[in-house]
Image (cartoon, rainbow, N blue to C red; front, side, top):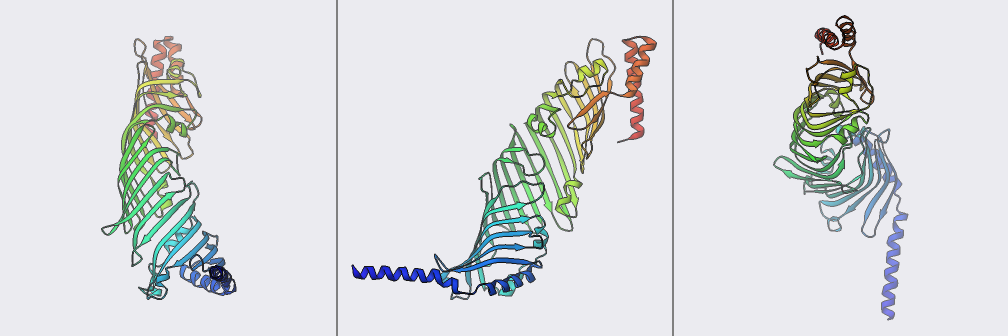
Length: 444
């Protein structure tokens, strides 16, 4: 019993020594030297606020509150370097790196892209250090206009510090990605459930599956498969960044309920119905942030059995009066094309038909979200009347639709000369002809 007690006391003393020893090791001088070397290698100021050597549960070096860049473009709450005990006396040292709560600003990409490839490995020698595993907890991207949840990463590296596998998962478990070597590049599989797009319209993706292949400076996405709003979006895309950034792809939509997505664009005027269509897109820019500004896209669409909420086209064409928001227009089919050039959108060849009316027209959406276009509405009541040209103006949030000035002037003149009914109809028709002639001279 006494012998056991002595063993216990000896064990406690040993643990106490292992805990106390690191406090007597001067770490600050090593941290200052590490800051200087890291700043030279990275080409940006590096600050390490604190550091310590721990001996239990296993030997490790822990550095805290690390920042990189003049504006703290990269911040790390804590970094731990844990060597493998079996490799301490071997030629190649095997280590694991644990990073906690890093925050990466968009400007950090400039620092990272300027790093020389394999510089650290070349200085250390080909067999000096093998980083076996890197774990990152609660990584946060602090990028303007993008709302991404924090995520965890688990990276395993092969003997030559080449990627063996990478697993990424948001802390809420909504999005997961797996990266593995394939041929001369890497295969990337992304899966998501109940995921809200982090940029642009906050569309809710019910289920997402993407297959990608990364090689050198090109990312191929041969399969895009999204389930959203009771419909499907499929397609493919390609992204490359050799001498500038290039993006292109094709998309197809089937039976997507447009009510909720269109209400994200405008709560006052929106659509209801099932959307189907297809199209392509491309873009070129000096950097990734400029791709959206240089977007070129062409998309054909068709909506069946729907409702245009917020505008009553029948009432507008019947009364020849100005109308803001209010009312609705039911239709059997709405079709057309959507062309995008940068932040300018154009709805062309719009055709709407129902039992009460037939409409056609063109509408532009300017970068300021201002609307500009003309839609001709023809009512179907007994003998068909002339198409009533309606001017579309205002903004997406507050559109304004009313008969064009030429149509109103023609209606007044026709009614005065030939009386209501036929005179009004002929006057509107003449006004519509004037609008078309003006449109030819004004162009797109």
